[in-house]
Structures are given as structure tokens and as C-alpha cells.
Image (tube, rainbow, N blue to C red; front, side, top):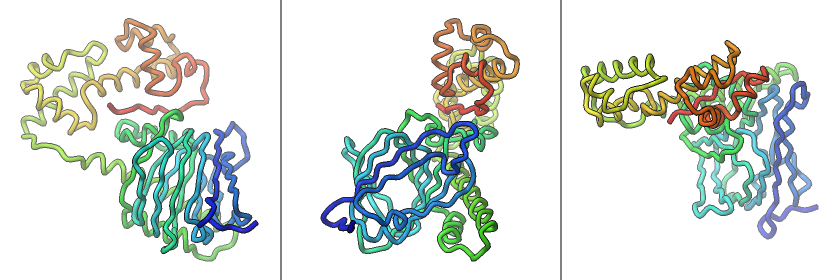
Amino acid sequence: MSLDAKTRPVAVSTDYIEPVKGDSNILDRCSYDVRGTMATHDLVRFFKVKTGLAMSATGSGYGKLSEVEYETLNAPVSFYFILSGRFSIRVRGKAREIDLNAGSSIISSMPGTTGRITIPPQKALTVVELKMDRTFLHTYLENCISNVPPEILHLLDPGKRVIAAQPLSREITDLLVQIVHPPVYTAGVMTLFYESRALDLLALQLESFLRAEKAAPGFDLSASDVERIHAAHDLLLSEFRDPPTISTLARICGINEFKLKKGFKQTFGMTIFGFIKQQKMKTAWDLIKDDGISVTRAASEVGYTNVSHFINAFRRRFSINPGQLKRSWKIREIPVKNQ
């Protein structure tokens, strides 16, 4: 079968199934069905990394394409790194086209979408992709979850559609060049090479988004303002179960409400309301998981008088019901969403 993408778009159907425990499929059952060409190996080259994480890079076949129609049923978490070339994505139902150029990186999870990718033929397209399941990503975020920006946290929810872009850093660019033009090693050593580069790439990309969040523009705070905002934080930390109103908190700490709200978010990366909810949910998680207390008691311990409201809040924050957490020890992550 010949390929003539200029007159007939190539259709790409992707599907993804979350891996089950003990699954030996290193690519986590992620399959690609490319119709319109026999040379599917020219389109994407896969590198086996480890369970829960796969890496791929574009091949020479992409230079033959001008349009790719795609359909995504389920979707893993994907980090894309564009080293050269450019392309645009049109998601069906969305008015705005997304243009992606060399020197940019994208984090995404787009389940249940169809659309078209347009690739200009003038320049070779070189893209490296990390594809991972959410449990794998959770394990890397658990210890720094309170500092993770919303774009990353939303990736952990299989029902959310997420796409966010950032420029490539010099460190990431250097890694991509190594991946696309690797040294010559024996087969076993090559496996270690790709695994180490994939994990380095993941770490650098996550750190890049964390740095960007911290560098968000703010407004000037005096030393006394910062001291009062930290005092408010400490007070909320001890009284999150039954916190004071913002006006009361501002009066206690000797700062006006506007400066308290803006300064708190600038200093701690979340709103006062978001911080209170985070503390409630983190405490509830620990009470249920570590202390084994009932869902009703956990709700009461963190200040909820309505158990249904507590269950809904817990599920929104962790994508799991508190009762499920109590019954299962398979889920170890604590994905807390900033507000």
C-alpha cells in the first residue's frame, strides 16, 4: 500500500489501557493503528524503558506526511519535546488551532478526542515523547505534591483533558540530542542508556513546570507583610478544621484582606481556601490510610459535618472514594490539587 498524504490523510487511532498488576507489557498496552501506510515503523520508534513509562521518537516517515487524522479513545499522560520542525493540532469541536514549534515542550492528556495534525513538509519533524500511566507519575510526585502546579495535577485525573506548553530548556535540549543521536552501546547497555535519559527528561520537565509556577509575576511585599502572611499560614495550619474567616484572619494578623489574599497565594502558591482544603484532605488521607479510622470519623476529624460533602471533596481531590482507600492498599499516591 502506497502513502500519498498530500491527497489522502493518514488516519491514526490510538488507545490506551491502564496496566494491571503483573502486566508484562513494558509499553503499558498502548497501541497505535496507522492506516494508509505500511511503513508504520518509519513513523514512531519506541524505546522500552520500564513498566509504567515508555519513550518514543519520530522517524523519517513523518517527512512524508502533511496531515494526520487522529482519534484518541483512552489516553496516558504524555510529555512531548519538539526538537525540530513544527506542526499544528486541531481538536474537533475546538475553534482554536494549537501551533507547536521547535524549542517547545507540551504536557498533555487528551482522552476521548478526535482531530487533525498538520505537518508542514519543508523541515524534518523531530519529536521525543514520554508516555506514562498515572500511577507511575504519582510515585514521582508524592513527596512534593503540595508544590505541584495545577497543569501537572490535572494530568492525574483520567477524566480531564489537559494540554500546556513551555519552552525547552538548554538541559532538556541536550538530553533530546543524546536520545535522537545516541552513542553506540551493546543491547543491554542501550536499555540502561534510554532508561536513564527518560528519567532525566521526566525530572527536568517536572522541575521546569515547578520553576515556572514559582516565577509567576506578583507584587511587592514588605518584610513585615511577609511576616504577617507567615503568621496567618501558621494559624491556619493549627486551626484548619474550623478556620477563621479571611476578615478575622486579617485582623488577627494585622494585615488588610487584599494584601493577605494576594500575598498568601504569591508566597505559598495557593489560595487561603485552597490551603485549608489541602490540609483537610491530607489529614483525612493519613487518618484513613495510616490510622484506619472510619470515613465518618475522618470527616468529623477534619471539620466536615456532612459526610456526603466530605466524600465528594475527597473524591475530587484524590480521584478515589475514601471508602475505596480504606479497602485497598494498591493506591499509594496523594495527588492534592492546588486551588
